[in-house]
Structures are given as C-alpha cells and as structure tokens.
Length: 543
Ligand code: FRU
Image 1 (spheres, rainbow, N blue to C red):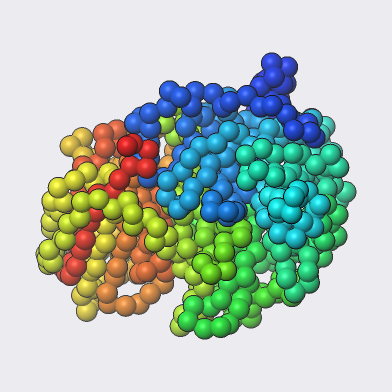
Image 2 (image 1 turned 60 degrees about the vertical axis):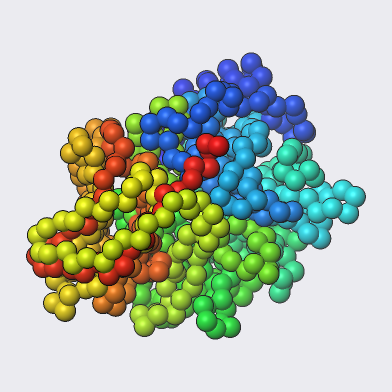
C-alpha cells in the first residue's frame, strides 16, 4: 500500500475538487448521486478487453466487495475510482447477475464522504432485522466496510481506518449510510485495520466480523451490526508474512464426501504472495464462536510449507466468498481481483484497468497430505460454450510440438486436456499460445521438478513493469499418472484448474496481437495427449 502515501496528496485534492463539483456525494443520509461517467460509450471491444470476465465499463477497479446473494441476484460491488485508470479515492462500484455469468452494471453504490474513502468490506442480508434498518417486514441488505481517512493518514496518527455500515431497502439499488458511523473506531490505533467480512453465527446468535490488522486477523462480535465487541485474534505466528494482511474471510465448510465441518480462513497478503506481490493464503481449523484454532495436521502442513495458497498464479488477489448463498445450493463461491499490486496500475489497457477472476466454487478436501482447498469454475459458466471440438488423441514425440487446429479463436476459449505421464515422469510438456509476431505464452508441467509452470517471459508487452515477465512455478499436489488441465483463455488472461482444481494458476498477459494459435509440446521425452475438448465461448458483453 506504499502507493497510498505517494499519491495521497494528489488524490485528496482531486477528491476535494470532485466534492466541490458535486462528483463525490456522500454523507450519512441518502443523496442523489451522479451517473457514472462514460458508460454509454463503452463497447467492450478494446484491445485486451476480457469477453467473459467481469470488468468495469471504464476507469479503475480493484478488490471485489460486498458479495451477497439476495432475491435471485448475486451482487458484486468493487473498489472503484471513477475518475482515472489508476487507484484513487475509493467508491463501491456495483453490478448484479442472476447466474454469475452475465453481469448488469448498476450506478455507484457508495461514495467517499467526510469520514473517508470507502475501502473493502462485505454485505449481508439481515434476515431478522437485528439492525432495525428493515422496513415493511423485509430484511435490509447491510454493507460493512472500512473508512480510510486520507487527512488522518497524512497526520500520521495511525487511527485513519475504522469501520462503517450502510443499508439498502431496495435490493441494493440505493444505500443509506448509518448516521452513527463509525461503528468500530480504531481505538487501538492500528495503522492497517480494515476489510471487514461479516457472517451470522447461528450457534452464538450473533454476527462475527473478521478484520485484518496488518500482521494478524481480529474477530469481533455484534448482535445488531452496530455495536462490536472484541473476541480474539489469530495469525501472528502462522502463514506468510511478507507484507500486510488484507481482506480476510472465515468460512464454514463441509469436507467433501463427509459430514465433517471445518472452518477455512482466507487471508490476502500484499506483498509476499507466491509469485511476488499479491497472493491469497488459507488456513484450516475450527471456530467456536470466539476463537479460530488451527487444525493440528494443517499446522504441520504450514510448518513444512510456510503457507498454503488458494491460487499459485500471480493474478488472483483480494478474493473472498459470497454471503447468503441459499442452503439448498450450499456452495462456497469465491471471486478474486485478476491483478497484482506489483504492476496492476501500469498494465497496458486503455480506458479501464482490471478484471475479476471467474467465479469459482471452493471445496475442502481431505487428501493423503491433509486438508486442501480445491477451486473449480462454477458450472454456470457452461452456458457460455458455443462451438465445440473434440481434440484427437496424439503422442507428442520428444522435443516436438503439435499444432491443435481448433477452428475458432483460442483467445476466447475453454479447453480440457488430459495427458498420460510416461513412466519415467521426467518429461517437460504443456501447451503454447502464440501469434504471428512470435509472441508466446506457455503453461506446462516440469516432470523432473514435479511442478507446473506459467511462462510469460515472451508473451507480448511486458515493458510496463520489470516485475511482470517471469516463469511462475507451483508444486503439483496430485501424483496421478493422468494429468488434467482445464483452461479458460480470455484475451489477456488464463485460468488453469489442474487435476480437478487441486492446483490453480491465474495469470495475465498482453500479446500485442491476440493469440490465435495453440500447440502442445514435449521436451526431454514424449507424452501422450489422451483426450481433449475445446469450446469457443460467447462474449457476455456482445449480443
Ligand atoms: C486490497 C486493498 C484493501 C483495501 C483496498 C483499498 O487490495 O489494499 O486492503 O481495503 O485494497 O482499495
């Protein structure tokens, strides 16, 4: 968050100017807000524009916020700066979807006000009207977010982040800030005190908040979302600590194939992620309504590996899960920001910056090595499948490559590939995306090291940051001789779900001309591609 300090002065003046001109509304009462700029002119056809990922029509976006399901709609709010394509005074942008695939943009939900910028947070359905914000017997939506006060930050008193709430009685279309804000002041004067994630804990009949505090998570409790009491903290001695802990999420999960219930703490970290910069780690344990206690076998995993990552690519950050997914659905649905603070503000997109990852279902598995979090693309995404093609089985001889003629643009596709590893296991193989400018991206498996890798060293424009190019590696979790890759490619990104979601890598790239060729290659031995299928995917933005 060094950028915060550097640009605070300019941003503050921009924001003040905006306030004077009536651009940034905001006070504790409902206000009439201006429509977001430029929405009408946006075509979603710009270079690098994702076609089936959510991205803002224009300007800057970072973390997903306030994800909640209510009355048939998945809400997606997001950190948004409507006046520039770099980070600035934060608002909550807003979109809704009935299926997690097609998104409808709505006006900005929350504007900065005299208490500060609106940083990340969550939203819940207050089913029993514990807050008293409900009207006519209908439950209100309540957003719980961090106020970041730039004046106090400048003054250096370390008390510039505190928590506020807002509610909506019209399915999130308009929001009222609570006049009693802040509901959780920063009396401890913690320099980083933010990103509240709140859920209802039935056993203790109260709301629980997970909150990041620089190098640990704090848990707070409330009966009404307005008065909060400290419960406990976790994490100073566990996991990765290469940077600031941000955006926590505590989720109750049933271990797949059993009735066993565990709690998973998701914790975002910047810098210090698995590929440098931003990353998302997780912890498995129990929560008794007061305290999160690490599972002893998972503690062993952490002692051995240091940290466990939700995604080992460079570009999945600030992800948390949806609140209030109906019990009959039962899924834990996650979405992240497809970016990395190391270079997100420099990437070569034009009128907007950043996209979200695909929504994923998280599953907790008990594997031979202990509890592990798997990620799979939500099944709703299948409705995007258009033309399909079966890829013929082929043996790729050592040090050769085989072009796959899929007949539709690989730059907007979904691909399933199943490889059979040779007995020796030592072959290095994978797939390559390319264009006629000689730019190429590789995702492969290095059998000798037993690692997946994503190689974007020659993938196109990388001039914007020396931290961008590189080969990113991750240990393979599975040991099967069959290796399955499930890939989604969308203009400037790839998401790889390997071995049914045991290993996940999300990476961005910027080929100066779209990738239009795909091949599979093998080095140091041969490998058999035993099965394959590819689909071109529909655009969610073009008719
Ligand atoms: C994470 C983060 C959060 C903060 C927000 C500010 O990317 O730094 O901790 O609330 O972004 O935009």
